[in-house]
Image 1 (cartoon, one colour):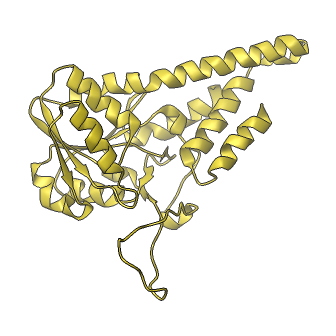
Image 2 (cartoon, rainbow, N blue to C red; image 1 turned 120 degrees about the horizontal axis):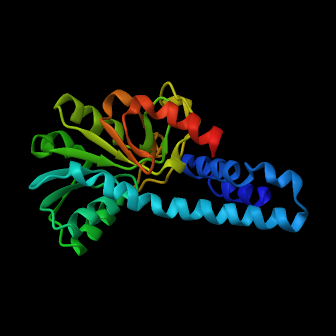
Amino acid sequence: MFIRVCAYQSWDTTSISLTAGCDLFMRYVTRTSALEYEDFNSARSRLIERAEKFGEISSKARRIIAMLSQDSIFYGCTILVHGFSIVVLEVLKTAAQNKKLFRVFCTEGRPDRTGLRLSNELAKLDVPVKLLIDSAVAYTMDEVDMVFVGADGVVESGGIINMMGTFQIALVAHSMNKPVYVAAESYKFARLYPLDQKDMAPALRPIDFGVPIPSKVEVERSARIYTPPQYLTLLFTDLGVLTPSVVSDELIQLYLWS
């Protein structure tokens, strides 16, 4: 089982959510004293049982988050989202199913244009959606009531690591008194404490500018960024609705008692 988990982690060594999820999985599955007193077949059955239980808990996480976040989405509101997050999509999908009237602004989401994908999914749900170029965030922020983003990882400070552009959106929202909400599953909670952007291993992605770029021109290809906790309002998780300041306590509980 350990070898299989290591193989999953090796698929993308820069993925914080994958690393954190695998760490929590191993702690949850192996944290039982009964393994010391059982024969091999009994221990194997217990490990499989706990692994299936972990999968069940994780699969329910998005539904729990979607339900917890519904009170924040009010009639006629405008929500700004950035990139493609499955859990944020679940939040918006649940709101649409609950017959809530709202509209969504989707950023394009460079460098991989994941906002295009999210806008297509929202259009299928008949949710009014407007696609923005990333540089138009400040221009449209006065029309926005709240920002919803996902996270690749939630770190010990209560900040998040997410796709490039998240920090500048949070800065603009903060300066204009707009709440920034994060929707993230607890298996994305990571034992990391970045102090600045350079504390993380770079997650490089190819960027297509549509025109040839001279070889002498250096291109920034990092695809993720750290957003400090002071620019976040609330985190909607399957552990409950958290303020950034209590994330450290939740991390201790997760890793000690998983």
